[in-house]
Length: 451
Ligand SMILES: *Cc1c(COP(=O)(O)O)cnc(C)c1O
Image (tube, rainbow, N blue to C red; front, side):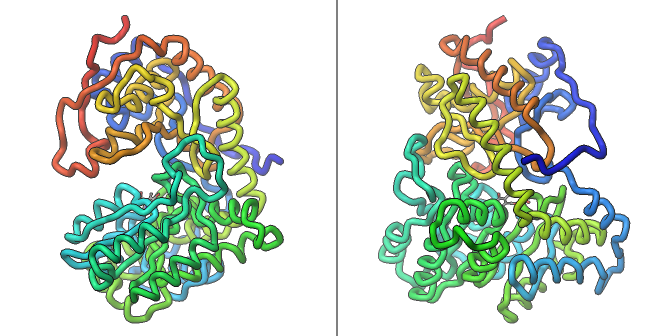
């Protein structure tokens, strides 16, 4: 059931093919370097790219810009308490700011951090503290064709193996990411969250939930975890987050805003430590790098994110894109996750080796053929890991509709028609932080591109 109508519009147009060819070459075959004006349908990320509601725009106008004790901060505190169940909030400029504040307060050199799967900025922030990020995805998580309800789950077995290996004293923090962004946006069951809570207690570790997509996760729990089929989204979200000692949040995801984030906790001592670090890196702890108006918009966004009609519309729109793509024969990761459709580039381009970056080849072809921007999440983004060669088409919230997705499916059809002739890529320049190379490295096609 449709849940929105438009109140403001933004003009978009498809640049000519020659313009796209030239733009791609000038971008070093890395679509992060493209001008947004040269992109027609932008599925690079769902992060901060969504449309705000009229109620959120109204909150912007009411923003209280007081340096300390702003009314807008009080609105955020009350939304976090009602929707997520935490008493203390430290606002930050976005999710990675929250990661810096929290992990900088919890980790030291030589620590080991198990996570179902580290998101790229999480991995980089854990490593930046001198700690070792270890992924513990559930069995089968990287099999794009295995149908299972909670492929985002944390493998308790793998987490125990890490502790057996390095000793519990080196594991002060355990992180669970819901939904699991780096595993195709797959959800995590509440049962799995309970098990990780118990595990964290056994080894006396702090249990952190990366809550960026907590509302989408709650919608999946309601659909797929029998215990919760009659529960409300609100109740599911509060129960699942309630097992954590602290959460990190990017408001750009399920906060339904274009910028912002926070740490939240009930632990008064951890709250104090986070506040001190926030002053150093973000701002005074009642604004933390955000304008008062943005705090107000995020407070409204958090409440909207758990509305059942919003979540139904959200999951439906991802499912629509997935169905249109499958109907034209594009291999995708199954089941479909919460914020994106993931295309299986190794199945699409069997003639390309992982070292030739089949995912990046697909990203370039989607742009070349139809001005569609996606992102590679395979061997290019995650060097030296054994992952499937996926391309993510992330869906900005409340922004694109069926007609946009039909264009994406037509573009994919054009790519499929020439699939045998697509060449691989090599890296032409490597940036300093290898964990983040896909944001800025330049590439070159291994063979001359088609005229
Ligand atoms: C986006 C994201 C982050 C980082 O948030 P930013 O707002 O982009 O800095 C951290 N963890 C996960 C799971 C994310 O999806």
